[in-house]
Image (tube, rainbow, N blue to C red; front, side, top):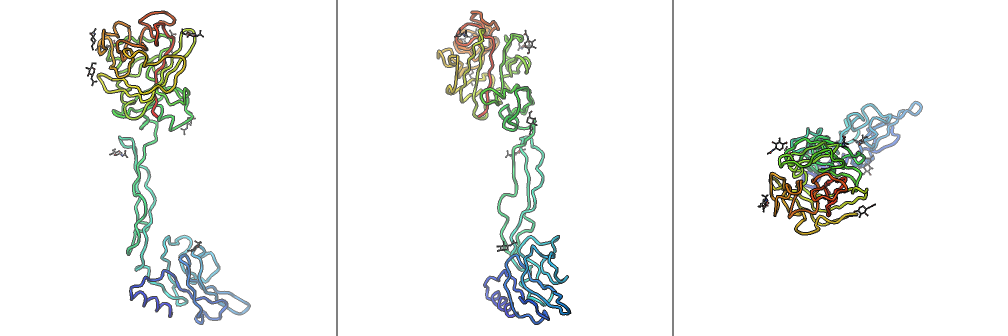
Length: 377
Ligand SMILES: *[C@@H]1O[C@H](CO)[C@@H](O)[C@H](O)[C@H]1NC(C)=O
Ligand SMILES: *[C@@H]1O[C@H](CO)[C@@H](O)[C@H](O)[C@H]1NC(C)=O
Ligand SMILES: *[C@@H]1O[C@H](CO)[C@@H](O)[C@H](O)[C@H]1NC(C)=O
Ligand SMILES: *[C@@H]1O[C@H](CO)[C@@H](O)[C@H](O)[C@H]1NC(C)=O
Ligand SMILES: *[C@@H]1O[C@H](CO)[C@@H](O)[C@H](O)[C@H]1NC(C)=O
Ligand SMILES: *[C@@H]1O[C@H](CO)[C@@H](O)[C@H](O)[C@H]1NC(C)=O
Ligand SMILES: *[C@@H]1O[C@H](CO)[C@@H](O)[C@H](O)[C@H]1NC(C)=O
Ligand SMILES: *[C@@H]1O[C@H](CO)[C@@H](O)[C@H](O)[C@H]1NC(C)=O
């Protein structure tokens, strides 16, 4: 009781009020009213009184009890302070004694209470920008009487993880599931959000490659007009060209590598990898590559400066951006022709034959297979 007064006086003089609860502290006494010992409880303790039957005698124990044990000890029904296990309070403000056995601390209503977060809401549906958000409120409880606000964010956003959203290319797919096999997958282009089927090479060179040109048996005619090169043609699981307008969307928003693979008619293979691949917007669809990173069994796309496709616009027979003659018409192809080419990837399918119109790389002997693909790094 005396301590209580001291605390109240301190409060009047503006000194912070102790958070501690003062409890009577006696063991084996005959009458709870006769207890005089006192104890300062910890933050997570409350006062208790326990009745002990010893023969014909009834004795009392009093003291501080851990809040976590409230209601789990054989104590008097009204003698344990703090809430039941089911409704135990989350913050530091505990119920005070309901009897005179111990002193009352400052009423809860005046104590400072720090805010605590409620739980997060469920993630929202994916927005058109392929993100989703969730929120939480600082109201379990809200801060009171100058208590601190909840620390941290009250809203979060993340990229949606669904097969149809923000899977912009095969490298995204592989990031979502590292065990995917090569094959045809559906993606959503990042700018116009077109749904598209693409062939993903998940094995070569670490996988995650989006194929935009594939030829291996000459079943598809590659001598096509500009509109067809813009929109794509062929069979996504067979020979095909992806379409410049999609390729631009998929290879203009980050850092990409370009890889080409060739197979000669005698079975020998070659590949070539470049960094900093970018395809500009139409109608030029300007092709750009940076340095040559890895290669084997073939010469370079930079070979012969007036033949290199680097920084050239796309030419078809009906859309001539080439620098000398109409190279597409002359060499039966479609390409980022310069004056004219070192790689006629979309030329005539004529494996093993010397032919200036043939699908060939750095010579004029027809290849039996080509693949062009890119991946986001
Ligand atoms: C009670 O609080 C004390 C000090 O604040 C701490 O050391 C102890 O672990 C807490 N006990 C429980 C059960 O939370
Ligand atoms: C999420 O999408 C909304 C539009 O749906 C957009 O305003 C917001 O900037 C996007 N947030 C992020 C982090 O991308
Ligand atoms: C990842 O891909 C494999 C092979 O297609 C599939 O069996 C597995 O369920 C996928 N895992 C997830 C998390 O989608
Ligand atoms: C391009 O070729 C396709 C298929 O042969 C044809 O339908 C289309 O009209 C052609 N476009 C132009 C502009 O010639
Ligand atoms: C070429 O390959 C495709 C797809 O594998 C197949 O459907 C087609 O019959 C083949 N054509 C020739 C001429 O071999
Ligand atoms: C295949 O042809 C290429 C180019 O003519 C040549 O360099 C290579 O040695 C040949 N490979 C085989 C296995 O004959
Ligand atoms: C497109 O190509 C033409 C012909 O090469 C050129 O004159 C023009 O500047 C190019 N436009 C852009 C935006 O690169
Ligand atoms: C193709 O365009 C180039 C200039 O961009 C020009 O020199 C050449 O004559 C054109 N060829 C044809 C066949 O129009």
